[in-house]
Length: 212
Image (cartoon, rainbow, N blue to C red; front, side, top):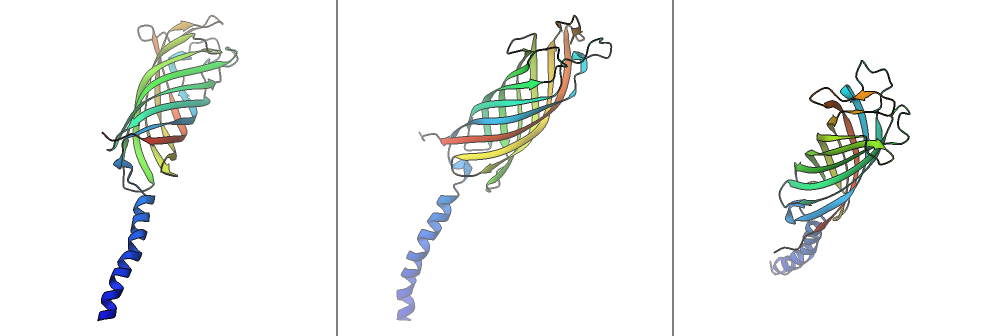
């Protein structure tokens, strides 16, 4: 009996560091506010160029699929929400009507994380912003864009996450006449609709904000 009593404190001392290390290795994502920033490699598949390339057009389609890079920064709260902004530039197939077709987007974004206390965290995301399209960073037309997507984020360390998202993105472009003389996106009060599918591979860093 005396041996058992003397062994109990030793067992507690031995177990305590193990428990502390386990908790320290996996801090719950909601225990801090974070600034979260990073880059995303994006693929923009145009499902339908719609009014940008109408059936009555005599010239090839000026807006095709492409890919590019996005940078973003935002605030991730202790709860399930993230809010931030992103800038994306992607190169697209323009049927050689533009020398270097670049689609630029600047967006406000939000995410809602479905946090189950694991390193892999799924989320729902959406956004709204402005878009410019033209040759070599110029602008032949502009408009608005939005998106809805589902994604997942894998925590590699306390500060680094990787992930991906798949979603739907519509565009509303202002009507214009291209360099080949073709009138485009001039259907709804001088605007035209197009839409596509987005795919992102994300690398982001998050830094805890000081508690007040």
